[in-house]
Image 1 (cartoon, rainbow, N blue to C red):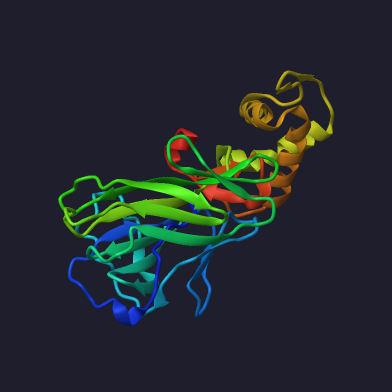
Image 2 (image 1 turned 45 degrees about the horizontal axis):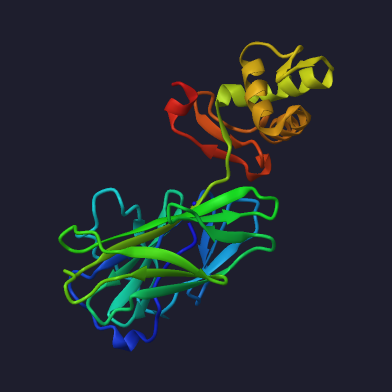
Amino acid sequence: MTVAALAAGINSAAAAPVPAPAVQDAGLHVIDKAEVLKDSATILTGPAGAENLSVLVPGTIITSQQADTRHVPSGLFKGEGDPLLKTALPDSTITSYATEKGTQSLISITGEDAPQEYRFAMDLPEGVSTAISANGSIAITAASGETLGQIDAPWAYDANGVAVPTKFSLDGSVLVQTVQHSSSTVYPVVADPSIQWVPWPVLAVSGIEIKMFSSIAVAIGAGGAWAGCTFSKVTGVAAKIVSQICTVVGVGGVAGVVNYVSNTYSNSSVQPLGCYGVYITNPGWGLRSMPARDCGF
């Protein structure tokens, strides 16, 4: 879930190609949706069913080519395929990729003349706000107080794997990342802020259990007594599902979640042994594929 940090940009002509560029990961890691507007350096992103949050990627759009990730520590770069977007700035470029959960943008910092401060203008949906957390990450919060996602705390490393000081700040709706590279820094520098949407809590259920939602809906519709989060007409695995939903949304919210999932998925082509996540507080966001281990397979 994270709102992109990219770089303060000017002119593509000023950014000549440099071997083994520095890389800053300003990735948007989203659950369901990420889109680059045509002929624009704007990335639209947000959970399915939600309004878009847009992030303006600074710099001038240039021909896409792969970023050099040789100096990126293992496991940090999650981009897939060819770049979606590339922009140029002084002594740096920004390369955006699709990932399993959205997009990831790599800022390549090639020398001392690259900015130390990277500013990303965000256009937040109405009622959505951001705030810096104690651990240096930034929370993305709905007007209701629900956590929608976060911008993971930033990191930065030079070409020798030495940590480079970096932090976030907010200037109104602009996300600012400061990367304190200097004449003593061994370039390239690799720094990361990542947007991670968190449409949670997520109930992990198998395809077989998804099919149960219809029978659960029928049982609840037939009436029965509640004892805490236990419904007298629902037993076995179905009772466990009801109990887990109830602990999140309360007794009054269970029927709404069950009915929505039942109406949407009872005739769908989910795989019996597939593992799926149901967003309990926002079932309208749809099913998310989950690791089999989350369903006990």
